[in-house]
Length: 70
Image (cartoon, rainbow, N blue to C red):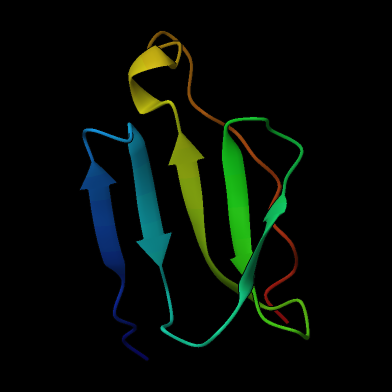
């Protein structure tokens, strides 16, 4: 099944946002200080935000544990 993904980069705010759904949700912390996840009330991941993109260590991939999508 195909799924649409929306991606925004805010150069001024220095963050990248990825959304899998436009459903209402809230942001919460992940195990990585640079990543916040957007989840609904059941905990399903709706998207995520990467903050301070320009300051990330470009020599290593960014890794974060997101909540279960179920």
